[in-house]
Amino acid sequence: MIILDGKKTSNDIKEEIAIEVAELLSSGKKRPHLAAILVGNDGASETYVNAKVKACEKAGLQSTLVRFEDKVSEEELLAAIEQINQDVSIDGLIVQLPLPKHIDEMKVTESIFPEKDVDGFHPSNIGKMTLNLPTFLPATPAGIIELLTRYNVETSGKHCVVIGRSHIVGSPMSILMARNCDPGNCTVTLTHSRTQNLKAITKTADILIVALGKAEFVNADMVKEGVCVIDVGISRVKSDKTKSGWKLLGDVAFDDVKDKCAYITPVPGGVGPMTIAMLLKNTLLAAKSKS
Ligand code: NAP
Image (cartoon, rainbow, N blue to C red; front, side):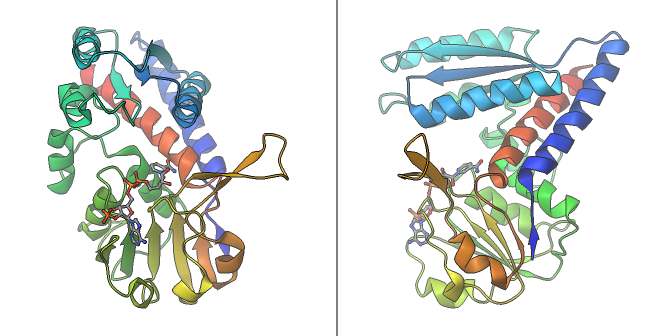
């Protein structure tokens, strides 16, 4: 069994980005700049945004964090996005999701200039991804593709089963794995909460990508020998064994499943750090596409 080490791979990517940033600077270009908008004080969102800002520093990118209280109006938020859209010193913009209920997330996503949409969520970028045109790929699916690439996981002709059909993970993942490219060329089954007899389907997976948000949902009974398991899930659960009083669990019961796997991602240290690395890569791409 091989662990797909997202922590190490993401550090490699950050070092590669830092080299490219240094090259940009030495050729007289400016430092790539990511702006992040955070609304409210949700603990998980705060952790993710702080990790993104820290990763920018490590890779030599400039970052700006714009914070709003959770009672901010939709108009105020859209105005801030428009200001960043127009700011030529900023290359990429992300708005940390979820947003408070009174704000229309799709409206916010659509208001970001597609050329600054380094999360890859704008309908125009999703459309380009579907057509296999150059664009910003959504960061989490892009991180999974990068892991499969760097570990030389064979995907062509394989049966890939995806659990979860969210716009940010499951759906784009199913599109990317079915594309006529490498990694890709899989026969893909996209499953969700209405799927019947899920276990019978997951047991036929050569590659199983799990993104449903239910801690340790997938167990050894649901997978076949030699499977490649990609665990996207992150759930915070209470724990009396950690100082903080909580721990992170994936959607896969790692200890139960690992011995049947050819490859598996751990949680933490698998897909999560890769997501951040791909966000930085998209920001570098945004900056380079302007020069
Ligand atoms: P989401 O929007 O929470 O949607 C969950 C999906 O799972 C839905 O499509 C739902 O089906 C499906 N589902 C729920 N119960 C199911 C069941 N019993 N059997 C089969 N499918 C079921 O998904 P998400 O935003 O992609 O998040 C999923 C998990 O990934 C969460 O733990 C999240 O924190 C994590 N995540 C991690 C990263 C990272 O960087 N590591 C990034 C993003 C998300 P329906 O559509 O029918 O409701």
